[in-house]
Image (cartoon, rainbow, N blue to C red; front, side, top):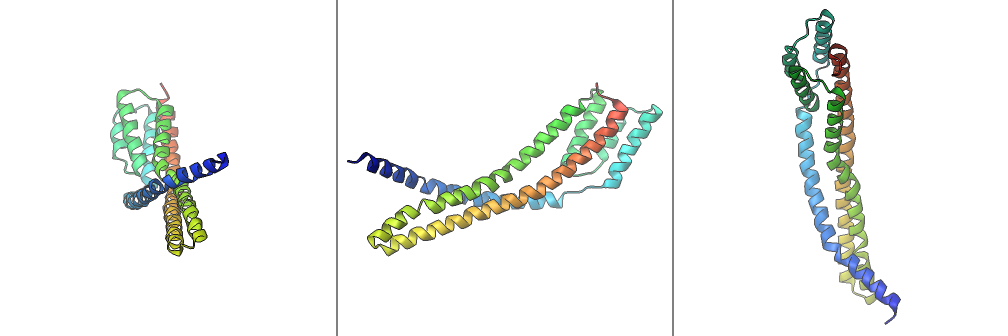
Length: 210
């Protein structure tokens, strides 16, 4: 048997063996994208950013620092400030540092950068891998479809073409959801990081870094 023929057949069967795993992954990605939409709506409904309250908090901390009367009572003010999820969580962690009297602002800021990046990973993967799987799901059935065309088997041709188009749509659907959610959340989290930097600027002036 010709060696090139063996190679071609091996490539064909290896790629064809990926058909069902790709289809299953695509279906899982679609379900995952719908779950992310629900999570996004929930996050949006709970997203509360009060700029005036944040300015008041930072102003009070700065005033106490200037008067030399700063104390661990600042922790209560930090915890009571209602902001977005990440900013509120950051304020609670900052309040813990104030109570302990140990301040590692740079590390705390870096931790929240990582947390926000991790939150974006799911939608980034969806936006990137979804269309890739859709393309794989498109190309894999084209081989059997062309073989059906060569053999005059119209049913095999039609079945594989329908599968190819369906996987393309699913991949683009999942990828588009991932892309949109990533773009919106990136803007949200950039604003959260700006708020966190704003808080830290005031806290560093008062407490310094130990």
